Image: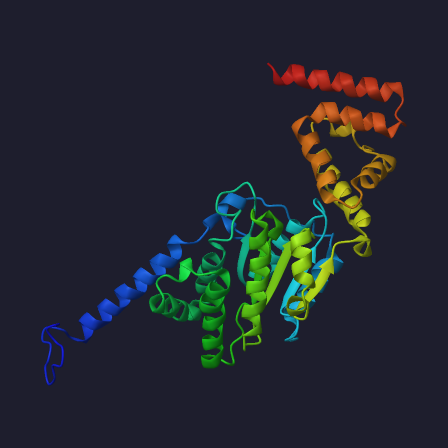
Amino acid sequence: MHSFDQASNFAIYGLNQTDIRINSEQHKEKAFDCLQNEIVPGASHNAGERYDAPKCHPETRKAVLGNIKSWIDSDNEATKIMWLYGPAGGGKSAIAQTTAEDCHGEGKLAASFFFFRFAAGRNKKDGLVATIAFQLCVSIPNIKEYVIKQIEKNPNIFKSNIKTQMQSLVIEPFNLLSQVDTSISYPRLIIIDGLDECEIRKDQAEIIKAITEALSMDHSPYLRVLLVSRPEVEIRQTFNEDSVSSMCTRLALDDTYDPDKDIDIFLRSHFQALKRHHDLRSILESWPSDETIHRIVEKSSGQFIYASTILDKILENDWILSLTLLHLMGKHHLLSWMHYIQSFFQFVKITKR
């Protein structure tokens, strides 16, 4: 039998309001520490691990980005999820990164998680919801107390399935917050990029279903979730299920958005920047030709990664690939070639002194 079983009319001395408040604060700090221990620090849009992540050139992808922003600002309760999909190298992550940065600057980004198959923690589902919940506490300070209460209520919440975590740590706090502060507009967008890079395929489907089911119980008008991936079979089949498709709008990165035009702009801009800082810029004024750029665009087949790789290789092996591109032009006579090569070796000789 415990000491206080069936006891009545007793008092505990030595405790005051300050002691109780300190004890309560310590419990909250412990709960928040538990949350922080479960996050994946390198998964957010502005994580140091993702420094200089690819994003859209300012003059490209305007139509796609415009459609995404219109959806974010929409109050349509039926489509709280957008699935942005396209082939590998099509620029999906750059669009997600640009959207994240723009919305962060505008106070609309609530949280982000960028999957990556070659980074520990970012290639599995385990820390996804905890990372999102932690970022919510940062971007929306008023929600923190509700997230902490959920952890105090169930300290093992991080061992629960994704659906339960999403409902407890994201949706429930949002619903509670919206009941208290009805007049305030909070950051509303959650971005999850590279879903196909989550290693276990069945987990990809679980994440989609968990988010969909959780959002179906969301009574606030706030949340929007942008899911970005390749249209892999498992993911495509899950989005085709009635319970998911009824809550989702789709955005395909296809020829509708004229990727060739954007790739052309991207190439010309970067070639101009390269020439401005090049030691041989005086002989590169007409380099590369329109024909060369057209060939690169054509070979890219709508994939930004091809054009981006060409530029990266030029920066890594400057004179070799510059000569290659001059050869592709087919319009420079021998004198130009000799001038270029002579200038190059003169430059090498100077730099070796």
